[in-house]
Length: 447
Ligand code: SF4
Image (cartoon, rainbow, N blue to C red; front, top):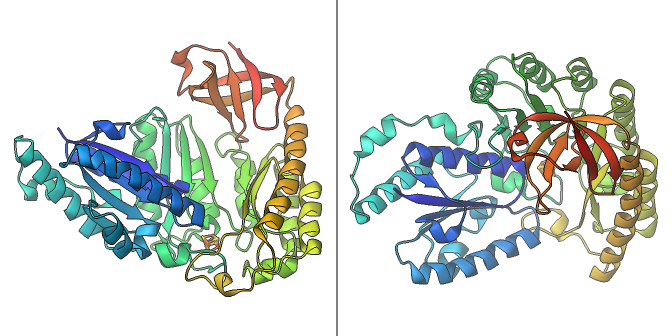
């Protein structure tokens, strides 16, 4: 049997893509392993969103070079966003790489290549060699566009479904439209079928994924995102559904109303990327919304979903960001009191418009702004979390935490630690919150 290992960098869309590849390989009688040292085939799913993540991939490949020297039969495949525009670089810098396939490349080519590699490895392992046509006949081609099949990991009750791919927005700092291509929505019928199968297999938590889920439109029925979310929520079964990412440019009140109507199923959590509190910077980023529009959407969420949590993304140090622009961002953060913020220093990416803009700040200034923002947010997150002390939250238990406690997640995306039996993993439980920190809650199980 061929053992494969997948290393995934980046967003949930990449997780879903890796899941599709894993499922495909499992269908080819390969076995997923969780250590590179046990693998015959390693697939690296790359992320180009930040310079730093690209550097991490190169240093990971450097480590794999040593492994490959010890095991010359080891095959290494690079897929994903960086593979879209650095294909030649990968082949030149890392001569041991077997194949490179970018996010925009024809998935049938990757599929055929995987089959060829598996067949040749089976031959070299002197195993029974199946016929390539049989392989092809047995494959579900949709596995490469929908990542809905359960992941063969400890998070076996989570299902990541790419409802769309690509992006048409061309935010001036973002490389995604260049690496993943134009936006394409997948068939709602296929999505719902996949979800139904997953629920039947025991999925408890479904993630609907897209770069901008709010612009989803079913190519066959014109179903929009609110309607798709409602259709998912109406499915029979004991499960939660979440979505990421929403885009303030396209978010509609309908989505919030569906969340409120089906709050037992649709998690009360909205990741709503703001990026900056300054309209001048939002315009320079080509985000196509104003702060006022964003605040109105936050009001929708607060009015219809008073218990919902909100997280956001903030980029610090975008070219042209003045002290005043940064202050505006801090003011908005203090006003909205997000539950969590994913904050980053702006990193110029090749091909993007922003990469051509004059950078007015030193790295030290950007670091200092990031530290100020993060300190403010830590205090807000802690205060928000303290409001849950004494409350009972329904949670899905995900895994054993490093400290021996169990780690669960609430509908509001809080990480909750509690003492409990390992048998509780992958089940819904009620947890009473005893104490709160900025990053997580500590509770005890209510039997
Ligand atoms: S919406 Fe903007 S930031 Fe998000 S993927 Fe598209 S271009 Fe990138």
